[in-house]
Image (cartoon, rainbow, N blue to C red):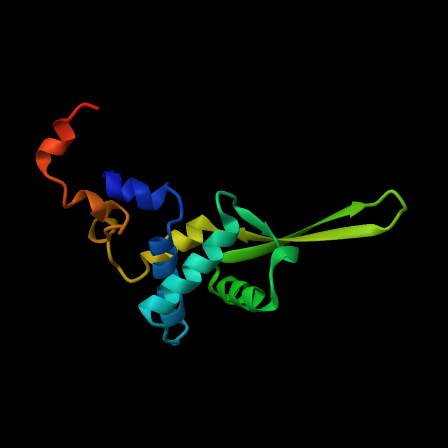
Length: 138
């Protein structure tokens, strides 16, 4: 397995990967979304998750929740809830949004494009560096 394949099969969910999954998922539902719109949604949603796999629903605004519901329809996000009993006997429910990385990857590669064909924009910074920079000692 190449390094690029590993990045897209076991690595973190990047904005590029999520945007690609959103775009492919929308086209699967016969809906159109520009690449920039998909990227903006991916960036916005992933900012809530950070390094975590879940987000507590209470921190979302109604507009954000709409985007989360759309991604739930695509199979990218899922919901869970946890119930606990408070000291006074009342039940308390906590609702979570979970990211489903396996579905993100599946949707991202749904159009038949292989992992080698996708180059992360983050890694493109290294393309312009001269070869001798790799030999320098700091």
